[in-house]
Every structure is written in C-alpha cells, then in structure tokens.
Image 1 (spheres, rainbow, N blue to C red):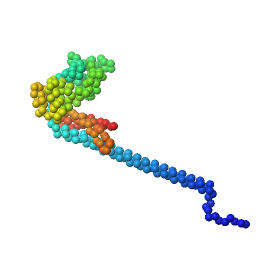
Image 2: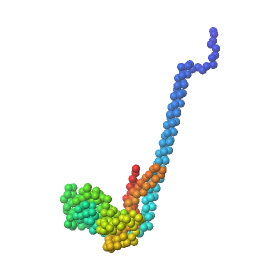
Image 3: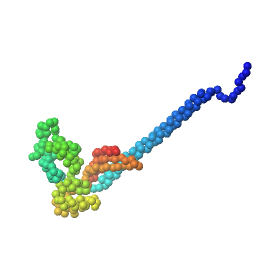
Image 4: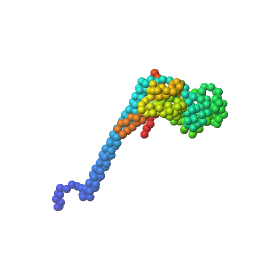
Length: 267
C-alpha cells in the first residue's frame, strides 16, 4: 500500500488556521481595549485624587484666612458706644419708609408688654392669623423682621442691606453705608468727609473728632472704628481650584474672637 509522503505541515487545515488567527486577533484586541480602559481609569483616579487633595488644601487655606482675621481683630482695640435707637426712625425716613415702624421694632424686642404709640405687643400679635408671640428679646435674624407689625416683604427687602441683628451699640465709620451714617451724624457734609477719609485709608478713633468738629459728643461716641461683630469671607486657592468660607466673628474688646456662624460657599 502506498503512503503519502510527509509534508512537514501541522495538522490544521487552512480554514481552521483562519479561525485560529481571527480568534488570536480578537483576543489581542480585547486585551488592548482592557489595557486602555485600565489606563484611563487609573488616570481618572489620579486626577480625582489630585482634585480631592487640592480641595482639602484650598479649604484649609480658607480656614487659615479666617484664623488670620481673628488674630487681627484680637489685636485691635475696640470701644463701646451709646444705643442707636434714636437713629432708627431717621434711617427709616432716609429709606423712604414709615418712621413709625421703629415703635413696632422696639416693641417686638423689648421685655415688656406695653405697646408704644405706633407699635404692637402680645395682645395684638395673638389676634393675628396665625397668632404670634413677640420675641421680647433681641432679634435672632434679619428675616425675623418680617414678623413685625407693618413690615412686609417689600419693606424687609428695603431694610435688609442697612440693618444687623449682631447687637452692635455703635456704627463703624469704615464700613457703614451712607444712609446709616446720615441717620447717626445728621450732617451731610460731615458724612461726605467721613466717606472721603475712608477712601484714603482706615479711619481711627482720633480721626472722628477732626472730621466732625461740630458734632455733639454723643454722635462721636456713636462712631466706633472697630465693631464687635464682623463677617469674614476667606478664599483659598490651589491651582485653578477655589474654596470660599464665610464666617461671622464675635470680637468684643478684650475678648478672644469667637466664630458664631460658618458656611461654605461652594462654586
């Protein structure tokens, strides 16, 4: 019987060899895709890690800014001043509002139940729908003013930029608005001098008498270049990333500043 001579070829036929080649190429392609995916995932993880670290660093820098502000305030002397109740009706007039609202504001915050001529106390508030009880204590927030007799949304919007519930007993001539300064000083020329002076640099206590030579002593006492409460906004940056925090610091004279409110202003 005749036998076919050996050809030296493997046992795969041409069609089988094609299938094997296609499978190998497919496997190689899948491996390439997986490798590329892993590389992209690793790069993404690295970028996310860098961004998270940068965010933490920026937040820490912003907090450091608040700490620096607290140190500066602690090293600055402060003085007290008289109550500013008499300036409230004048401010209301300057803002185009009813000066009688001053009575309602005072009644809400005072400890008694005796209404002022144009104010309201417990009896009036309990008769409203829904019934209310006046706080009979200092306001807790500016928004609380909306509960006071005669103050609606439009009045509150007008008042908001010019009032505070921080419990200040004087006005800072370096930061107060023109309207507030006019309500206290009652002298437009004197207010203009204060505003011009603070554009050149910070007003100190010794400057007030020189800038307001004709003002009554009580008015000068009502202008204190250092308040007891401050809003501090600090921004920390790492590369293009920014983090901002806003705090309210209580910083009376001779007392270590204390953070009484804190919020992050995320982009």
